[in-house]
Image (cartoon, rainbow, N blue to C red; front, top):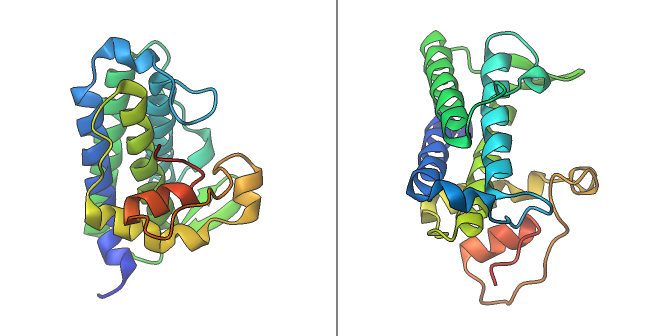
Length: 191
């Protein structure tokens, strides 16, 4: 079946792989570095992404995305591995069932799995850059992944920005590349 839904699982796997690569390359002590996310360290970024992946798993299993939490006491890398493995396993099981229009719970709302997948691709990709910046790692993102996220950036509403999930759009030079445009639309400056 054509459409973004059928590439979204692959994009999520790619984003997860990119994020994991940034984490694996980081010195654990570097996770204490400040990220571009106001008030967050690299470890906070990892915990946030891990929690979101566990929420995705919970939603695919019929629960509420918002009730998932990472187990207490895990170091960031172990929390990441647990969340990554659970999310990718549940994603594969979901794909095997072949029910593309499934609705899942996010708090009081029901949203499509497609909506949640696209949002997670955006979240994990942008936070891969945040993590790289926090730990002093490679902050270049794959062009195809950036292109997929950039195409979805108009979905970010003013309400989402006002809630703190995304910063205000940062002015960018006309000659800005795709990654710089994506980050500026997410409220992040490359420089």
